[in-house]
Length: 424
Image 1 (cartoon, rainbow, N blue to C red):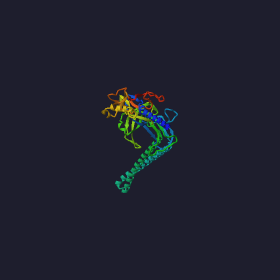
Image 2 (image 1 turned 120 degrees about the horizontal axis):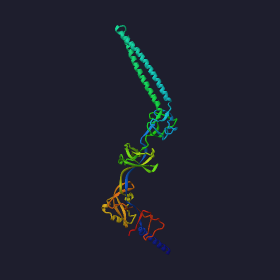
Image 3 (image 1 turned 135 degrees about the horizontal axis):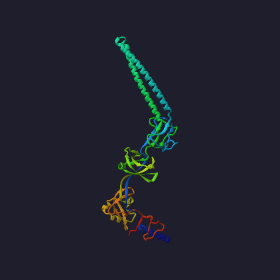
Image 4 (image 1 turned 90 degrees about the vertical axis):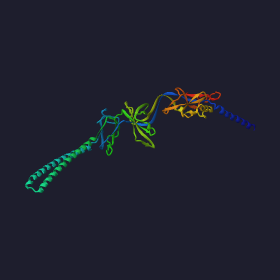
């Protein structure tokens, strides 16, 4: 019986001690605040988007006739080599040659048909002259009644028919000439030439490959006219498109040069929207200079549209605007004192910062301005450069007892945190 009584006393004392510790000692643990300093600087409001780099002008060189690729044209800058990827080409330079055998035969046939048509024309002209002479003879004999009226009518009809045959023969000659021009043109199309000065960014055929020109001309080469000017085709969400305007400055980066920022301007806002999984986006064209040819076609660009910029303003981290004291994070005294120091008019404001004054934290009502997502412009009667504001609280890393002893097994207080003595 005494053993049970002794155990009950020991357990009661232990429970009472634990309760006293958690009520009077643990609550009195020191509270450490993470602070940040109000600084002065520039803030930019941006709209972020993703885009793809494109040459400003791209020419898709195709084949207008069908046939087998016989050869590629010579590379003028590298003797002994042929046109390939990245080749610099000039206007009128030979890019490729299609087997001309079929089209050469068509030219020869058209030439023969033209010669035949011209010979037929000469025959028709001779027959027309003969019919004309017969009609003139009949016309001289008609007044003397030396020829019957039917013979005169026949001579006149033969002459008119001969003239019509001559006209038809002349038309046949013109038709043969047109057929010859078509055949010669098709033969010329077997030699594919560059329509502009530029650089080959894609070669889509190989020697020996047969291209078939039907309703759509098959693509042979893709030529960028001038790679010193590039475009970024950015996809902008419909919620942000209303803030995009022509001439707006743009900054973007590419994964190929992550530490370098490139600049451009908005030159076109396309109205042809695209919908992907119920998300509507608009294509915005950003033009940028590329004098060193570092930007390559089809690189992915991370684009920032500069909506608004303010310089030399007071800035505070957004975390400071979001933080506010919570009763279960600090002592009831701190929260209650903060509420007492906040007037009814100040409670109506939605933006406030908190500063440490002695044993309590005090709110400062501020007006917020431009934000870039990380920092926000602030202004107010008590706002000044260098003022330290609270951005968070941490009571887990460093704990001190009410008697001032320190737990040697816990890590030291990290830099940038301030200790507030326990209230009371």
